[in-house]
Amino acid sequence: MQLCNENIESIYVMPGLLKFEHDCLTILSRSLLSVAPEEGCALLLGTQKPANNDQKTPAWHIQKIWPCLNAWHPGLMNNSGEEENEVVNHPKKLSKKNRFALDPKDQLEAQRWARKNHLQVLGVAHSHPQGRAKPSATDLCWGMSPGLMVIVSNTEGIKAWWQYGRGPEQHHEVLLVSDE
Ligand SMILES: [Zn+2]
Image 1 (cartoon, rainbow, N blue to C red):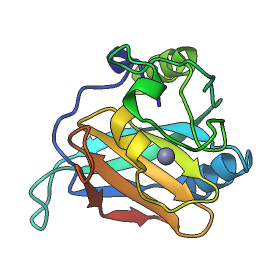
Image 2: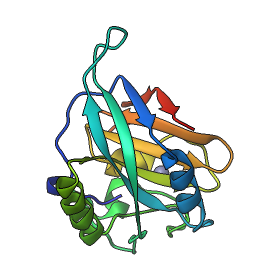
Image 3: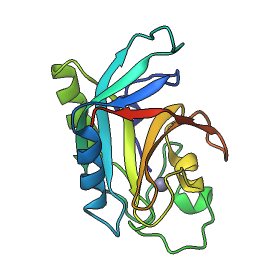
């Protein structure tokens, strides 16, 4: 995954709850799985709501799904300027079926639209058409940390994760609810 960090809000505290409003969960699932067997990706736009009595940290409300093109291509660099082969020596053949990258142009457009509409870009979603709904080793290497990562799986549904480091196991599952 490649991200331009300056285009995503800097939020360093894990949400107490992730709520998908309206039909956002359905839109997310349909748009990401529509490009299967390739991985799909999208940005999650919404607002942070103050914590209530049950939650110590704010709830994040997703109010708009911003579908993006999977812009992955061989030789892509990550945020640290490393080529993927240097980061993960993966025996699998690399393709859009097991990799994704956001196009910086999509991120800029989403950011501009969000600001105009009093929303924030809160996180990134991508799909594992044939895999589990949890971050892969590559996701954890390439993902933005700390940051919110939502994964849509064909078999396991949708799960949300908070990534707090670049190593294995450096993620927590975030409680996910929906209006639907
Ligand atoms: Zn992944």
